[in-house]
Image (tube, rainbow, N blue to C red):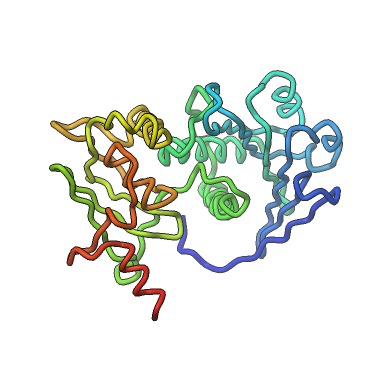
Length: 290
């Protein structure tokens, strides 16, 4: 993605219900997003936007009921595809789709966007994909491909603001701007990470305990479940006597990162330390006094 730059979003609550249909437009962009809960679909699907070509995301509970999964698709137009999913896909409870308010998107455009989004979701490994296959990138002209990469860049920038983080990967911050690297050393394993706007980032190559402590099943159930998911998605792999992170990965907090790494309940503010051994709690308290 491109370098961050300021932008504004205009969110129109179409029916007066903040949890109902919302139409979202971004400053200096020809795209438009419609985000809505499944329950309102029958009452809104006659809107003109649904008759246009677009790319869409469906989000809802996983089969085991623990956390979310995502499905990525395209429609030319969108409405028949959403009609089909409304009738046949049970898991989703909210949807968002993107169209163009300028030159209309065509079938090849949205096939390109769909393939790129699926690839990015697979790389980020933030949510399980309900899609079974990875479609091939559609054959676009050089100019169209460049236009769609810009469209995709703007689309991805909007999603976290809309509460969708399935495609986010830790950003490589320019030298001198990244938060101080912190360290976690315990029982022969070593991990590195830093705080960011995306959460607490654990760096590739960091180690985690190979096994959880018995108490973790009660006191750190979420961390145990996430450890299993990270193994399944190959975010971590077994090497010798430790698990090793194969990529940078974003956690919601320093404590959640520490719990996953240590395989037990942990306070990240006291587990993570700088090079001098000062704990994160002290670092934050000192920063608050500045």
